[in-house]
Image (tube, rainbow, N blue to C red):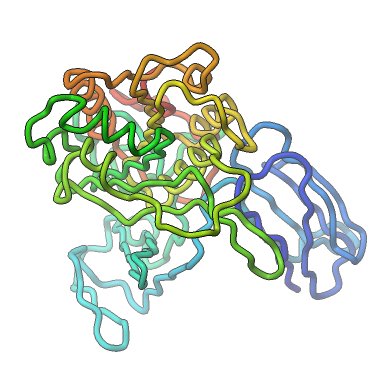
Length: 414
């Protein structure tokens, strides 16, 4: 008896959405739930329905249960909406549990032998597969400790802001995070490089003029105002490219390669790096700032790293062809716990988009820019990613009574 989703929940989804399932075996009915709330009950083929995600843009868990005539569960499948869906997947298979947690070299058969290590504590094995065109796929796996020789193939990274430096080791974090009042098992704390995803809505000419050495009168500023040495910067283009696949048209937001402080400081990166490639496939809708911010936030969740999104505006933009407005996208970022920083190159004009995005940092002088970068870096530096067992909806996680000196990440400065 098997059940699986034929529907793909890619992109940003709200409202009524069609769902189709493949069911093999003697199922008397299929029950659909969204976030553990009943949505529909199908009594026979075709196994199709429509489920309503509501108007709020938020992550959702969709479960399909195949039932027999007495209502007993025969099989189940689950999918997730408004959470990252990698275009390519990688799986880690442990043939035995030995190792000590250092970078390892694969042999020609794409295997690696893990050195002997203590299985009484939890270990995280991370794999990163790199493809042509700078695409990367990241996968985390937990084993040891309370898992023993078993493997947890699903982990959820929850960002916390620490007010007192490093967090205690994972075994000391019992009761710090809960879901529905239930303590969550902590597998690891991630403090590796941060990722900043940037959406530039301001024209490149204006960025170069106002953020270059002429505008801010900074001498030889290529390496000024940097983030952390290994922190990564990527750009999400706000004008999507229209592509055709399987007979359908889709709008995709291009994402740049990774840049670090080796290429230059953040002002230099904003005016010089990650420019869109020339092409004729731009979607006819034009610029979609809010949608691009939402896509950037989803990408920021993908690798369970410290993260933030930066939106750079002129201050006088009035046009945005997005399907979602700024308020809905800000609530979405709060739900998925990705901080948002908004900068403007000039004072916001009344009625402009900048006003809709809420408080913003104006970067009109060298001092403004230095303070804005310092605020952004402090936000990233204060974050710690706590890896908890299971794939969970981020908005369902709460701080437990044992948590000390931390807060859940929601948004950036307001």
